[in-house]
Image 1 (cartoon, one colour):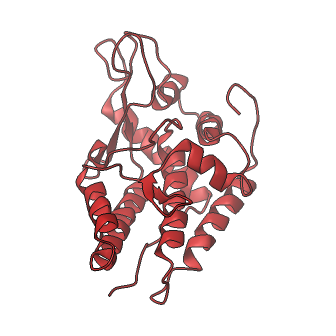
Image 2 (image 1 turned 120 degrees about the horizontal axis):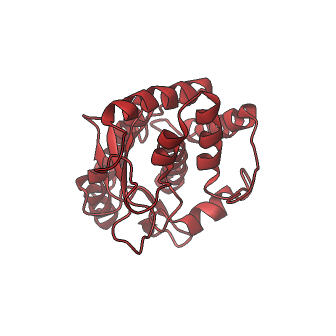
Length: 239
């Protein structure tokens, strides 16, 4: 998809998220024992929602640290692109749905860690460190049953049947729809991290401000609402 003009009808995007949500909700009850399957499906849903909401590039460890999220100010610090000129990073707004999804994901991780602590202490410890910022925030169980950071290589395999497109499809979809909603090009570029050295959004030579990000936040939330993106609670089973 990168570098292509592929466009997606919103009704197919709606179907994708309904499919991912249903895969979680079918398992989401106090009788569920397969915590590995549930965790994987839940983390996939969280990743897909947040990728749509914040325009993150599919890099080695996407949305790696919970400390990069400022849920009070509804902002996210992103560094997802290498630069020969130094640190290539940006700040993007977090729409309401994204904030709620992150909150639900934190609760899921904490509950699952509590559930596993008596008999899977190593996994429980890993999960606890995920919400303290000492381990990657998003994780999945691999084929060997080991809990590992969420990687593009894992996502590609998991999604190949449901959605066999490049992992950056969300960025292209959102760019098109933000422009359709008359968001200025420089603000869309700032959100996507498209800038040359010295032209960074919110930099000393930028004409953009936090107020612009707030307006962008409202438009992104409007798009998420139009797609019927849901906030789903995670693990419910207790010892």
